Image (tube, rainbow, N blue to C red; front, side):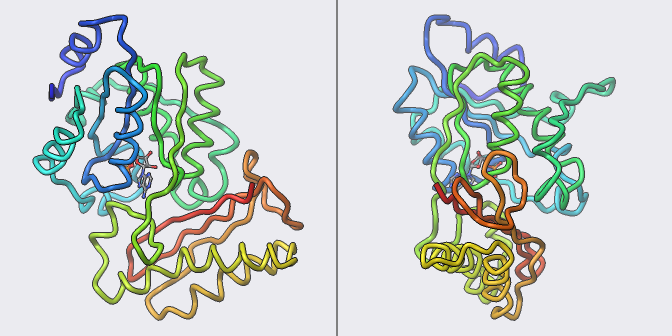
Length: 278
Ligand code: AMP
């Protein structure tokens, strides 16, 4: 496995065999089974697999959150080696954003609600770093998790608008046995908070069940999600949403394709999750 911090080293390995098909998995590290599901899919569908590990400062709207984001490079590299990954990019922030840096990618509409409303310029940072990753690796395919549903929508729009010549592959959310979506941030949960964190998935499931039983009123369904969260003493709703899957406009009357999503602070750890109604 080739592991390199610089762009020129990545390009050298990438173009050694120019006719090979490359799959890219962008990550912020502290890898878990969710990340590995993307790596395995990329491994199965490409000749070569590239992974990036970069905690991207421009997508954090809070310095403390960036500072405390979990990191374990040695363990990450061991996991990627075991999956047969070919190339790993481990840049430092000044390689991605050198001192004179001044170019950002702004996807205008689908970045506005939900995570965009809650986290300021988060998606400007995401779109910028992902477009740089696409330029550095020039992969045939790029792998993203449904866990970050709005991120998928934003990247899809960016790929279409900026004519990136690659296929986006969206992989299902990998969950713990109690339904909690795997996330690097889960490590910050205390044992009590960890138990209560299962309420995100429960809230989504209860709203979806109510929909399937005939409740199509958006406000009523959002109220069901909120009520499940409020049963947990450490949980506080940031937002609950039932929106159109492609425009992310909130629905008064719910109909497929819809994205049920929510962000919840559990004892100060901010978690997100979602379900799609096809
Ligand atoms: P991150 O390291 O959090 O930026 O995530 C890197 C990629 O892994 C993103 O495309 C995420 O959507 C994806 N991912 C994170 N958690 C999961 C999960 N539980 N299941 C599937 N994909 C995930």
